[in-house]
Length: 111
Image 1 (cartoon, rainbow, N blue to C red):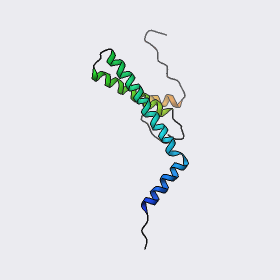
Image 2 (cartoon, rainbow, N blue to C red):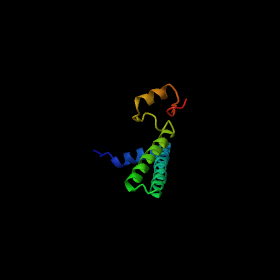
Image 3 (cartoon, rainbow, N blue to C red):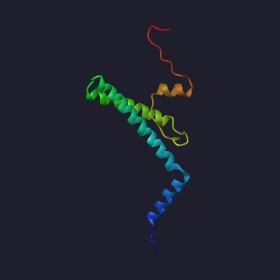
Image 4 (spheres, one colour):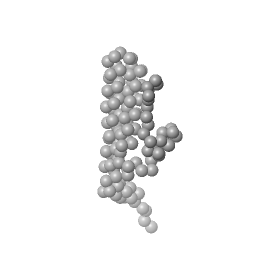
């Protein structure tokens, strides 16, 4: 009776993913998301601190901007890599995107 080698099987899976390039693509995606977050977080937080908005507001503003840029980096990623991943969005935004209707923002009182 032989015992299966779980570490050999795990190594075969990892080598298979590495040879197909999936790990490299996911690594680039994760780096892009983290880099986008970090740059926008530091830029917005630094700007808020320069105008003396206080630490809580500065960090909060930086986190919001960083999250928005991270989501943008994710959405612009290779579609084959992010296929099947679900992101929660408001229903109206999803319906507009399905119709390929661009969102138009107008100022009150302006035509």
